[in-house]
Image (cartoon, rainbow, N blue to C red; front, side, top):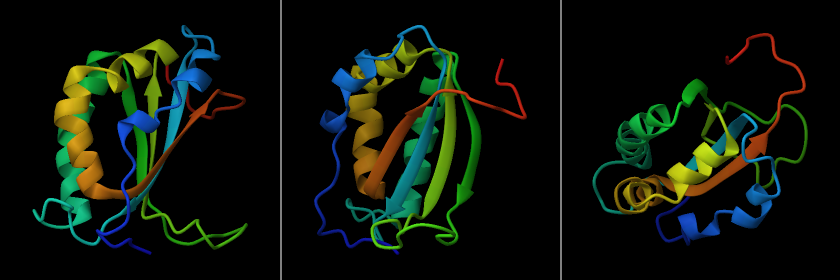
Amino acid sequence: MQASPEEVPLAVNMLNIEGLEQLDPQAPVVMLNLMRFHVRSRDGDGSGWDAYLRYSAITVPMIKARGGTLLWTGEAKAIALGPHAGNEWDFVALVSYPTVAAFLDMMTSEAYETEADPQRLNACAEHVIIATSEAYSKFKTK
C-alpha cells in the first residue's frame, strides 16, 4: 500500500542515537530497512520509487566509503504472518556496516543531511531501520 504525499514524513532527526549509542560502537551491524513509498515524490519529480532511486545513488557511495555494503534488496510482496495493519511495506533492504559507529557517522554527516535525506523524504512515506546483530548467517559479510 502506498501512502499519499500529504502524510507527515520521517526526518533524520528521528534517528535513535541514544539507542544506537547503547550498542557496541565497534560491533558490525546489519540494518534492516523497511520502506513504504509515496505514490508521487514529495518534490513532484516522478514517483516515490523514482526519488528512492535518487536517494540510493547518493547513499550507496556513502555506505561504501565507510566500509559498508548493500547485501540484499527486494520488493515486499505480502504479509505472510502477523498483523496486516501497519505492515504494508513496499521495499526491503539489508545493509551491512563494519561498525555501528560507521552507520552513525554516515547518518549524522552533513552530506547525508543535505544531499541524501531530502531524497529519502521525497521517496518514503515511512522508513523504519532496525539495527540487527548476527545470530546465524548462511553467508558471511566479512
